[in-house]
Length: 211
Picture 1: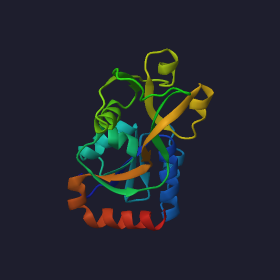
Picture 2: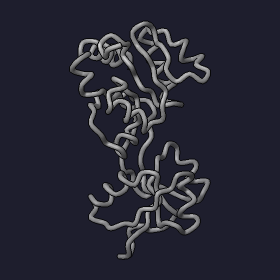
Picture 3: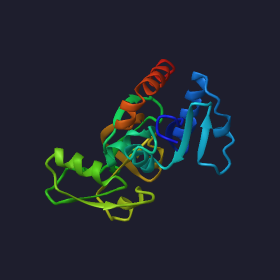
């Protein structure tokens, strides 16, 4: 099936962003029952004109960039970390949180001249933040609970996503500085936007009217 005949394909980040996007599509009037009762399926119809692909956040960007999905819904955090060739067309307003620099409560992070060590799942975001400050840092990439790093003296601070700050507080940590605000974004493949402009623009208009 060539690109123009198949349904418009939207990659959704599994989990909370998926649920919020499905809620939004239902508000517009799409039948999302197949996504609600998906079982283990990963490609699901939404009405007759849209197909939803469920993926991890980083893969949403890859699928949209390579054009196998026309559009995607992904957090600004993943966009900042990965970047890539696509258009970011709308802030969907849900999935709100922030990137923050945090560490042990009561510590003056900016004191002294030594090179600081930062633990994070987001090395590119962290590097860019400290480059703007003209600071040299060592970055340690952590896959799991980043909060452990300062507690184990692996790092002077962490760069992580903070929603309520409860996990930080419970572990004796605090936010030193906010880095960037994050929410779910609608991204679109550059070629799809040319080939399927009318379909994509009318869908985006519906989405924006129902945000």
